[in-house]
Image (cartoon, rainbow, N blue to C red):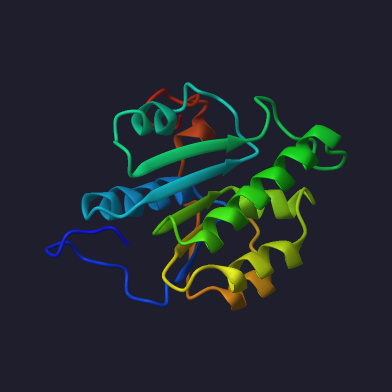
Length: 184
């Protein structure tokens, strides 16, 4: 890792985090940890699966975070049909996973966030064994966060930390639409 003497370092081996569940906050929690890691000079790389919108706050912030913070989007700007995903959705998710493998195994990032990759699994855009092998093959000091709904038991077993976000009350239920800067 390229840190100064006074900066903390992620101790090897890096851990695998999962933020899952049906509640709000999975991506937000991952980004909070990324913000903390970047503050210590860690090299942060975020891959969004099933998303492609340059207006997302994460995309705008990435441009301001400096050379240790990178965000890529591997998806289209429309919703994926879970029952009949388009070939393009499958291809983009698989390309994103290959990019993740390169980053995870190359030792060039300290914290790798695979945002919505669990949803990509749930939508059959990527295969469980591909994600599990990526986790096994990662560089020893690479910390990885996976987000999305419906984490499988196999994925949970492979993780070191699992947090489930559970909805109790949400203003969406009263008809409040997504708000810029808060949900996007």
